[in-house]
Amino acid sequence: MPEESSPIVVNTGPLIALTHGGVIDLLSRLPYQCISTPQVFDELANDTGPGKVVVPGDFIAIERLEHELDAQLVEKLDPGEASVIQLARERGVKRVCIDELRGRRAAREAGLTVTGSLGLLAQMKQHQLLVKIKPVLDKMLAAGFFVSEELIEQVLRDAGEWTES
Image (cartoon, rainbow, N blue to C red; front, side):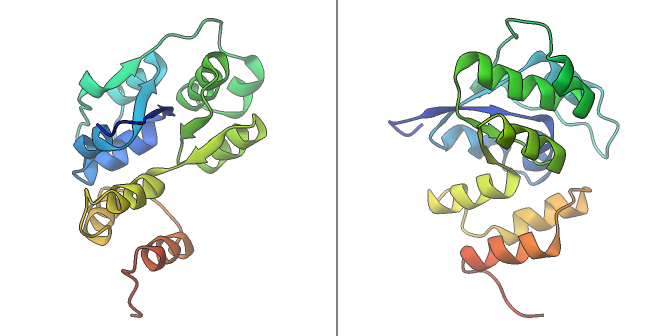
């Protein structure tokens, strides 16, 4: 792991996407101390999507919330997203990794810095852990990961991988 690392609280969606993309192990090589919640791992255990996702837990610390899930967060979000945002606030962690739009909005409203699966892929390429993002993204899309064409284009342009079709 790189010398300077900062904590990041990771939600279910990115863990599933990175697993289907075949790069979940590279998450441990980014400059983060990955944290998640029991609610996120419950969602992983109950996931009915294509292919069962088993995330190696040796580099993701699972931390319990100090308080009951915030009712206002639970009204707007699923338990995983709500717990990720709440854990970040309780622990003073500034960054979360959430893909779902509602969760990203709520995290920003809570004053958190938000990244997602594609942001992590870009960082993996920047840290020379990936040669190309597109093959990984293609695997994620084939497994049901949804992202707008505009965002795909932006990420691939930024990575120097965009080609007009």
